[in-house]
Length: 170
Image 1 (cartoon, rainbow, N blue to C red):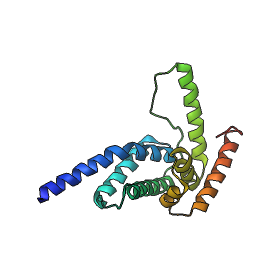
Image 2 (cartoon, helix red, strand yellow):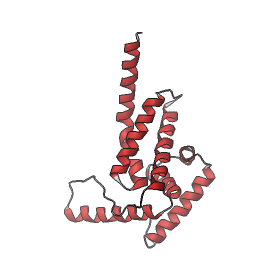
Image 3 (spheres, rainbow, N blue to C red):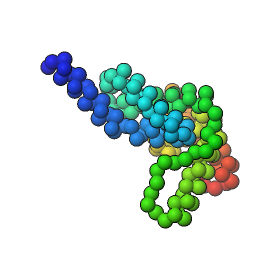
Image 4 (cartoon, rainbow, N blue to C red):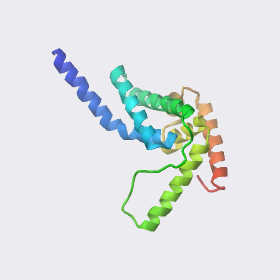
């Protein structure tokens, strides 16, 4: 196998990973940061680092954990230097009635604003565990902490969210 074909094979593999994981990284970063522009910057940095790192992972699960870990760490770094989002907009739109769309958008805005009020570690734990539906072990690996700490962070965050949202079910 020639060097050119190895390079093309690696490029094809990277393109495939990018296609498969880009939406996941963008969604996770947006939910943590509450800002599409920042989420896009984070996604670009994650995939730049992945390209530099190469595709040397023991399994698909190891790749996924690495991507979540880098995404979370970059989001935490960004949130330390960024001001809290004044307005959080969800760029997705659906073809449903205007009234239903408005109600859903208001609910999303309330939830995103409530999430933005949480400390970054708690917010990240909730996003990964409850919204991205990762297992507690996967969240612990992504955050570099223990499963017990993740459970505690999620529990505290959910209590705070209930309080912020006025006792409504989260």
